[in-house]
Image 1 (cartoon, rainbow over the protein chains, first blue to last red):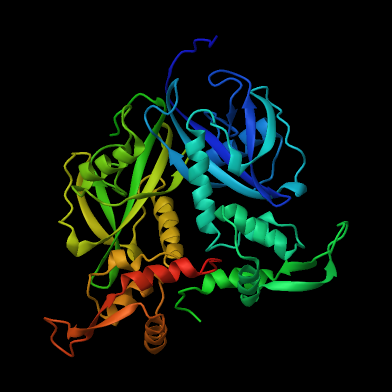
Image 2: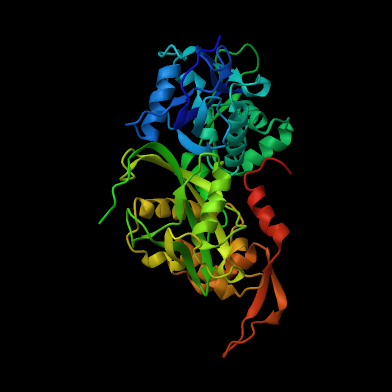
Length: 231
Length: 231
């Protein structure tokens, strides 16, 4: 049974939408909640901001408490402030997101009992989440997708050396649609920011593919020059 | 003397950074505060969110109370949550911005006594503002400037028909630097989104300049196609 807590007047919380890419799949970091309300539900890692804690510090602390991860570059993407979004009173939540390569991170594991577990879940088969977390996730995903066309974010999700298939899988996962292989490769190579390496994939059973690297300078520059009036 | 109000536990506020363009100058909408703290200081239009008010509704209501303007398309751009940003207690503020053509709006005029007056102020000679409003303004201005290179925002600031000089003034105001006239015109015309009209400026004393219009479809498309993988 849900315990009766006193209603609070108003408070702030943080919710984190952490995207990771692994084995051709785009994933999001979820927790299983250990306490009411929404006990046992899946949710984004999130909690209340302390009275003496700035919100940027709170975001890092809360993510660490609930998932064990730290040192991520998180960015605010939206603040959700509908009157009835929380069953216990007025809570405005500031949502942050981050992008990481899953392999470069240790396995998520909660420190706080508030989360029973923390794990990566594919973005495409998301169950209904606690509170308005489904909406928060969707807003973050939409913003991420938009950033794909004007910021060099593929960098943050792919390993340092990757195949064109991995790059295509990333775009397909983001856009949630299949892309034509020939057109995709032609277009991506035409931008000139991919450096072909003298190396192939290792540990694959069949037809090892060529590896590529981003030319970080060119990749970043292409986003800056568009419609710029400066030389 | 400053009156002593009880400290509140925690609360939310809204601050609005409204950019307008007029006569070649980029401006921001300010109020002169009518009450403590920071009585008589210049500030961004901002106030506390009501208990039963969603933050989007609060943003529209507060802007209207303090400046008389309404119907603007405001967007959140950042939430400021440092512990000591407000002298009376913990206040997290959600900052919104909007872009408008000043001529299409009526003169700003406060409805609430909380503001003594409301007026447009050039962005380049801004005095020190109340609270952390100088920082909020700067963050909004930086975001606006970044949007100039990936979203069709010049649309929202220029009159429907404009001269190339007005377009250049807008870019110069945004980037806060002088641009070479010949290069600017060549570059802008090369994009193909400017439609030359069979009309000239009226009511000017000397050498009426040609008027242009945006080809809205082309102007919007140029921002969508960049690094897109779709045809």
